[in-house]
Length: 132
Image 1: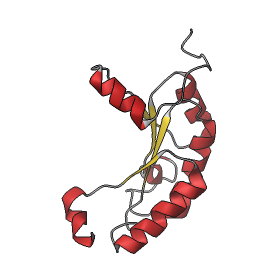
Image 2 (image 1 turned 30 degrees about the vertical axis):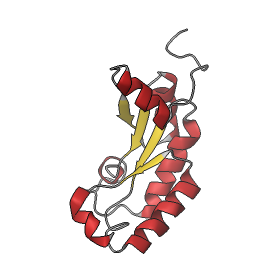
Image 3 (image 1 turned 45 degrees about the horizontal axis):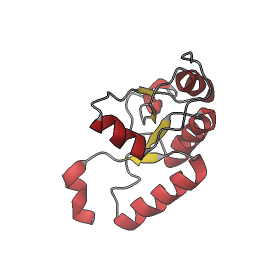
């Protein structure tokens, strides 16, 4: 089986648990578009992240703050369409989950429904628990 084989199984959270138990390393790369994601997926990388760094890399902004939920959905949908193997993770952009738990849930549901990604990533850890 070559590294560009298309018969690889879809990576899931169960796969990650099995890999951890076996002491295997997990690979992850970033993609923001269909073509790059397809290449990464075909190479057998375990996980692909659509980072809010798309603000910098794709739009030329100085930081990640300007990227919107709509823009992240666009990039995530493109990446998810290309992936048959990789576990796809999308950042929730700044401001999409800090206001309230209701706003966080609304945006998370929308992003999951409209993108086809496998998971969302929020940053902030314990400081965001005050909304819980």
